[in-house]
Length: 96
Image (cartoon, rainbow, N blue to C red):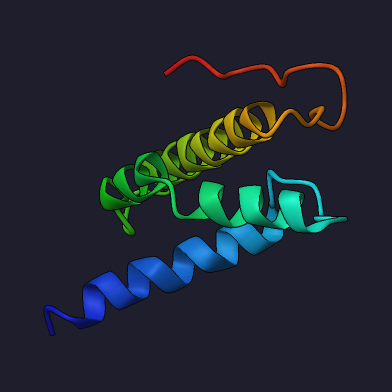
């Protein structure tokens, strides 16, 4: 039973990320590497650890935080590789 809860959380997280992917599709190997690095970022995992399945409001807030952490990690990686980030405007961050 204890193993089922983290698996359920991970599946919900993957479904939510697929529905609202904060990252643009990769068009080259460097972007794909940054995308993978962002998805594996510890900040994203920390956000998903706080999710509560039974509270929809809190769940949406945590998913938004995870998406923002993933996007931030992606942009940091792109800048470190000397690549321009797609778009030109940083998204509005909701109050936390």
